[in-house]
Amino acid sequence: MKVLILGSGLLGVTTAYELGKRGFQVTVLERNHESARETSFANGGQLSYSHAEPWASPSVIPKLPKWIGRDDAPLVFKFRADWQMIRWGVKFLRNCTTLRANVNCVNMLRLGLYSRKRMEEIRKDSGISFDFGNSGILHIYSTDADFDHAKKHLTFQEKFGCNQKLLSKDEVYRLEPTLTNSSRTVVGGIHAHEDETGDPYLFCNALAKVATERYGVEFKYGVTINDIKVENKTVVAVSTSEGDMTADGYVMAMGSYSAPILRNIGIDVPIYPMKGYSITINANDGCPNVSLTDGTHKIVYSRLGNRLRVAGTAEFAGHDQSLNEKRIGNIITAAKELFPKADWSQTIDKWACIRPSTPDGPPIIGNTPYRNLFLNTGHGTLGWTQAAGSAAIVSDAIEGKPPGIIVQGLTLERYVK
Image 1 (cartoon, rainbow, N blue to C red):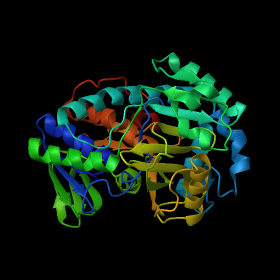
Image 2 (image 1 turned 45 degrees about the horizontal axis):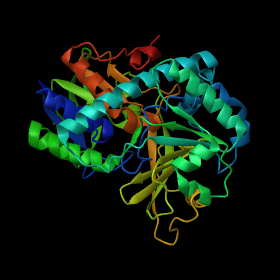
Image 3 (image 1 turned 60 degrees about the horizontal axis):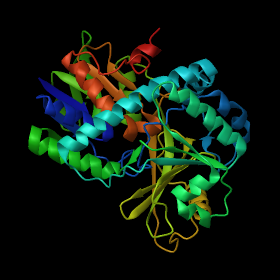
Image 4 (image 1 turned 180 degrees about the vertical axis):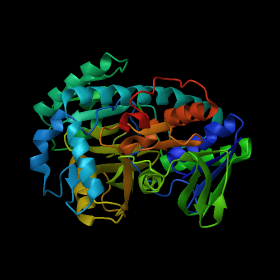
């Protein structure tokens, strides 16, 4: 069976690898000159399997009025005449209830924990290197209110098999001594000791190489996907800059660009781009060794070999991928405050991308109304975290096998009325 995968980011590459390993004839189409050149290129680097609290939650409602109009806010809406953004925003607010947030959290956690298992299998099977780290992720909090909320969420997730360690302020400093250099208040922390880190760009291109050499997967770069052609609830071809391309099965893994193409064939997925920013510097002794999440300021820090990656913010500005220097500046200011002894005199690599976000939080994976079209998109800020599990679920769907976990709340069905 021949499968055509649209997109060669984390979701596309992991799916190609999984299907190739299972004996499928796989071709991947990508408009860039190599894999992982867009959203997957320079994200926060965290495999945060334990992080399952959706943006849409009751805790965000009282914060929204304070964030509106602030360039340094963790969540920024740039108001515009964009019907898709308005629709997305309404659905987002509807999910900001305790019941819906808890359901979405459990669905995301189930996928995250499954992905941890599948990622371990990929690492062992492929033998690739990607600046992998398994020291966990340390979540720190600067206010009692934020820490209290995090403790309650930890207790909730424990019921579903998520193990994390609650730390006092002194225990936080013992785990990551470089934090003692900061003037920032730390009231406590949580160590997600089973979480991991790694460079998604290195991972994608190393895994693509293994998929090609070991399983015969073909990657066609420099190919722009224009449209999908359908007949009688079946995809018959993909229209590209190189002409029509055909297969027996198709996987949509184009991130934020999935939605407009899917709408052309009557699949109205509520995916909207959420812009994020990151910086990367060469690390020194003033940089953390443990990956960190600043739970108060919503910024993440990952040691990737001899580099430090710092990422954050969620900005809704359509498909604009341009760098906003003010937003980048806010990340640099926060990083300097937390790690003042890092080398801030060097050249800083800056990056911006748009992440395909659903209003409720979980991605959209699996079957569609078209018998041979499958989705692997909408992962928001957790594409790196959820890629391995999502690839396995999609591959099971293509094979007609039962998925490895319950997929309720992770598929297109939740939006179909």
